Image (cartoon, rainbow, N blue to C red; front, side, top):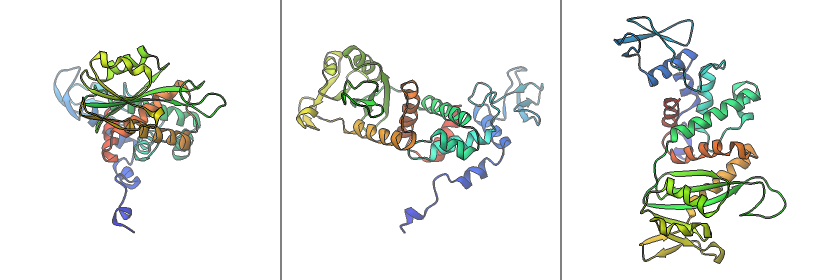
Length: 297
C-alpha cells in the first residue's frame, strides 16, 4: 500500500470527538469564535471575562453579570438538538467528497428524517453564506445546464420541467452558480454583468443569448460545440477559449446528485448548488473548512 493510502484522514472522527467531546465544548467553541472569552461587555461597557453558566447556553460578564447567548442569531438558536450533533453533521458535510443525504444524516445522528433534513438544509445555507461573493476577473468561462430527472420529450436546452443553472468559473479561481428562470439574452446578460468585472475575457459556447457580451465591455470568444469544436485560440485577445472547467463542474455535480440525492427539486436547487460550489471553491484541508463554517454561524 502506498504511503498516501495509509495516512489518516485530514480530520478524522477520532480527532473530531477529541476536540468536541461534549455539548459544552461545542458551546465554548462558538463563544470563542463569535466573541472571545474576554471582550467589552455590551451592557456595562467594561472589558471583562465571560464565564459559562451551568444551567443554560449562556456566558455571564464577570463585571456586571449580564448574560450573553453565543448561539443567538445562528442556526443553533432555539434548537433542541444537541450541539454536538449539529457539529458532527457539519463535520460530515466537510469530509464527504460529494454530499450528505437526509437519510444518511438520519442514520448517523439517530434523529428523525424531518430533523435530519432540516439540519442538512441549514448547513447548506451556511455553506452559501460562508462562501461569500467576489466579482470574477481575468478569464471567465460561462455555461448553463439543465438539472432534473429523466423524462420523455425534448432533451438539452428547452427540456420541460428542469431547473436552469448558470455557471461562471474564473480560470484558476472561484466558481459561481446562479439559478435562472430562462436563458434569454437579458437574463444571462444581467447575471454576467453582476458577477463578472468589465474588461474580463469571457468564453462561452455558441448560444445566441451570449451575443450581447462584446458590447458590454467584455472580450468575448465562443466555441462551437455544434461543430464539434471544444477549444480554439483567439489571436485578437491572446486567449484560449473553452468551457471545459464549467462543464467538468456540471458533470461532477450531476454525478453527486444522482448518487446521493437521486433528485433535487427546483425549490431547493440554490441550496444544493451553494453546497457544491462551496466545496469546489474550498480545496483547503477539511478541518479548515469546518472552522470556516463554524465561524459563519
